[in-house]
Length: 109
Image 1 (cartoon, rainbow, N blue to C red):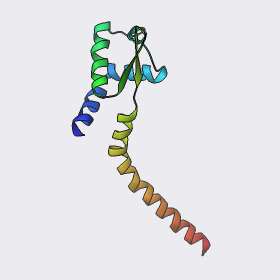
Image 2 (image 1 turned 120 degrees about the vertical axis):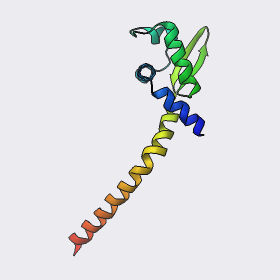
Image 3 (image 1 turned 90 degrees about the vertical axis):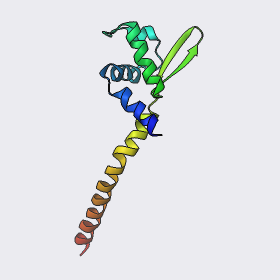
Image 4 (image 1 turned 135 degrees about the vertical axis):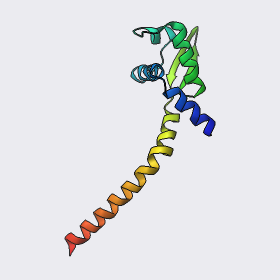
């Protein structure tokens, strides 16, 4: 599990890879050629970045005839959010719920 998380963090650390994820978020299911359009990266660089994203399970590819389509997989990012952000938010939400109960109790009395 930790090795998978490390791969995701490594993949997200690079701004070029984040840009590719943003491009897939805007329009999922793109070919390599479509992803290379409007990028200041060589086709070879995009291919290398996609390989890292695939190894981290952030991008999934599906062959459609002769085309290889790339799709964003948000699950690893969600798992990180749950592990690293969610547990910190739970405490804050619990505190807010307790505060609300106290305020409601004061307004009843």
